[in-house]
Image (cartoon, each protein chain N blue to C red):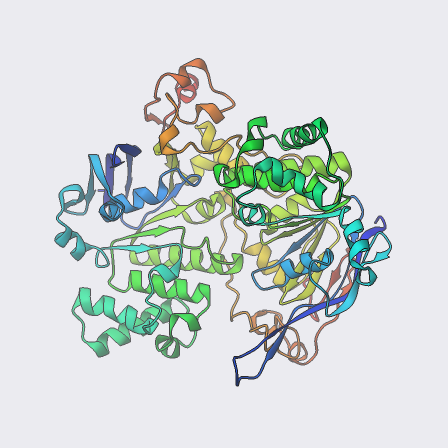
Length: 321
Length: 318
């Protein structure tokens, strides 16, 4: 494995919810003690269902939100210790593509304005004719017509808007890009187009991606390393996309994904129980109440992430070997 | 004998004709998938069958819809109302559009059997609880007294399914019933819906954009594109040997086990809007195999093996 470009150590983020004037405030740990390295030039996928903390992790990785505890370092530089000016400097090298390109593009900006915004923020605004050239290059790169430059976001389709989102993220030639469910709101046909594009840039520029998704089959296709999260914690890291999942939750995720092939129809073994409230996590393993392999120990003692023979890590007392 | 047969219906809204001669049928106990990208006309087809087009200012401008002993296109609203919920039920994508937020979920299920089956309060309640248990809702008696906001998305969708099933309908139209749910919950709901349809011999029209769900659940598939039927066949034939380039491309958009890097191929362009439907085959601008004829002449739906396909190329190769 290559050296990580981004390293997270014991990273946690808690959110406090106030219950009104007289209620008690409650705390949930959206991300809880995450230690993870993102190898340079590789794609790391994070999967999990709603509320597992994957989007919070994405924001922590870029220090878009502050960690409650733990640290993130980028190319050897500890992000938490940087002042605003230094942070802005380093942000040039790390970018994000959001799920909903409609809310991440200013509705009153033309597409050209949106594409130039990163340059303006970084004080790198091209002057004169190069400004138009930059926009033209970026549009061309993501396969949008030149006429798009003068359009407003509402005039574009979801897929076209996401192309703008990608062009904007890549405008400053970053090394690290966080992709937060970039295709979740798109049709499959458009999703595949966007993935094609992201794949090409990853190869072409040797980018390091952190790809957040709820779709395990997409992650298995697109990523080199797969991280499975459940209620804020990493439950498994698979070192290869085709590795056999060992954590019962990862297996349940895999079994819940239907292949587009009637020959692979299956009887789904339904996961029992409900996802516990993130405000009141059980003392042991958070998945215990829904797990088929559960034992008394699981309810008492939280399993630590331990190395597996397959080169991954799994947090389970009774993994499926 | 088909329970529902939709014969060449066209739907118009004002001067626009978003649906053009849609035809398919569903037998009792059969699960038919209706697939296509957003804007292909899936939901509009469902609304046409449910007689809900007036709500959006639309109407069926041609063709006929037969359901059991009824011709639906000429049915009065009063008689339609007696069918909806009783013999034909709808499950929508977002359970909150079907649930009243200020009433207990159990009462909302009770109401269906009180209204349509004439049951009394006590009997209706017993029936609801039994239905909820069959849908594997844990502690059904307690959940019966809960409000929608107290339940998770998957649980709310089960309540909606219970409402749909409780009057023993012959046909259920499910419009993207699992799209808003997490994958593990989606898998459970699809499992429950297919089991219930088979066990009760209910015909299920399953609208989805997810080819994985289609492969898992359906017997037959109708592929829609830009308001027309592109292809129709048994689920096995659709996946083993798709005849329409659109069907083939849709299947190719889904990452499968062992697909090499770069193997995932999208479909260039977008589904055209109703104002911009192209001449000839509506898919031809996005089709990698289009020939000159595709831009001029509308391909008709023709029999091909066990199914039907509307493509000039399929005709040439057949």
